[in-house]
Length: 68
Image 1 (tube, rainbow, N blue to C red):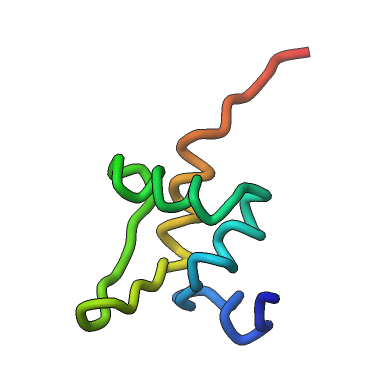
Image 2: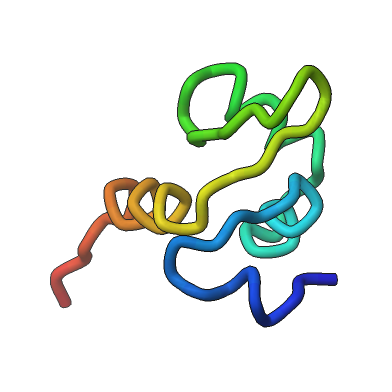
């Protein structure tokens, strides 16, 4: 479950939190990351975090506007 302090601008999210935010599986987050679509930060050899600002930028860039 996402913590409120991680939802602040500049916050770092876990893979599970990103999956919950995007409503996808953690495997999909891994796939999007390996394809270079989602930004990540490596903290050591095994710990990965995802910058909330970067995730939001990806969402904005991927959102299409429809004209009614």
